[in-house]
Length: 306
Image (cartoon, rainbow, N blue to C red; front, side, top):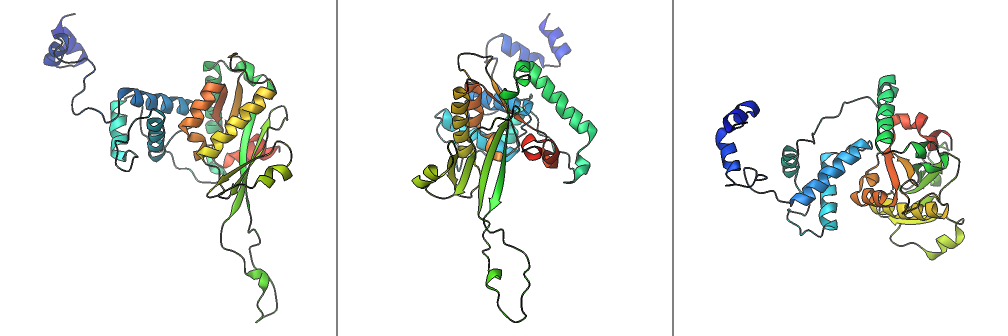
């Protein structure tokens, strides 16, 4: 095909094709200034976003920017952005450079049961079945001891709220309750076969007491956070302990690709960590996001059967 015919067929300027063929410029060269981050980091971000979307985890722009920062730290790349985190302007420029990615506005549904439709549920199962086929995980689905569901719940320490009845014009000591929303988070993980993995308790503390592990039931895990909620670091810690449990049960083997485990979770921000995703990929733990929203109370195994 001649240059003139190719320019006409693919709607590319004749001068651009002539310049590329004459090797006056690099074939990978793009117009404008060079990207801020090297190509291998941008490719790692694209691979991560596509893979997480296949698993049901759709990231917002702000969450994506945190992932970029994690990848930079993991790659030992020096800080090149103001305040270390990239800006939203950079994020949209990144999306323009990667046509495989697209930013879309989510569909707004009410928080009630109206968002739970037959069509949306069937679409979720179709995507899940396609993911299982693409990853060749049918043998995992057919083994209930290899399918786990991790769920978390918060226990508030100042639950004594509401109105109290007492004698008029007298102060009730019980009415004076704390306004702090201090809580303890408990992570529970069960397999489809009914086996319980080690639970984890997240406390709002700066330092954990050594007496906790001694007084707690055997196998219970403890972690701390500034808010009492699970964070990316606590979830990664749990994955490492969960891997030890799986290896002890002979459910996970680094040298055998057939020995994998499916871990079903919700779309909590702690599950979107690049470090957690990479750790699961390296160890054979397959993360997948269950149906989002209020439907968890009728579909999530840990919310309906435990």
